[in-house]
Image (tube, rainbow, N blue to C red; front, side, top):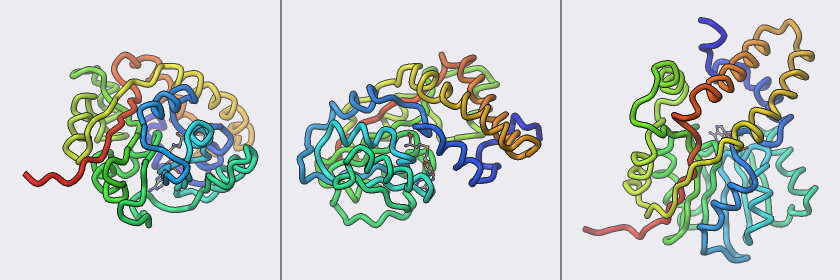
Length: 262
Ligand code: SAH
């Protein structure tokens, strides 16, 4: 197997965690996009309960907290990300409203109908988009919102190289109309969907990684796992540059509808 065909899952989690801890975001996005998605959510008050699933170090969570009322719980599998998340909240004096907790998105401990909003940027793929939408729904109050970003195809057909890369990395990737239909079929009214601008990948995700990569390769000179991991990150960034007309991240926002009895 060449380095380039290795997926992120094949690498040592501690190394991945260290690498991504050094950058502000662990997935594509931007403060502007977080605010735009928030503009579709109209049910929030100081009493609202919000969960941010797969929050990472909370780059976007802090933006959300600065632009929306309510109590926010960030959940992530990696303790180091949660440490940084809580440090970020404290640095911005948000610690009374924003708390990071180590946990898994496939084993959540919220009460039924406890949440007003479920947020997840660049993370629902870990459980799978449809599974996440369906399993998390019970935690939302009727009328509560879900807002997630998900890698999606822009076209019905695309070049073989990029099709194969993503079908291997994330077989759940699909077109925007299919993702919107899945949102509806999972028990939500589709409220909005919009494509994240290219800068969310280039300026906010891949560019900060270039510096981190230099540092990382110096620190781990000669470490084959670290070198292969960086090579795979660089390969992904090159593919994005080459094929960005065919795919990107999309925000999907839905509102929970009461159980239908048809
Ligand atoms: N939302 C952040 C991080 C996106 S990267 C951002 O946009 O910057 C995906 C995140 O999902 C990582 O932080 C990873 O640790 C987390 N993750 C992976 N599997 C998870 C699981 N089962 N439960 C919770 N978080 C998980």
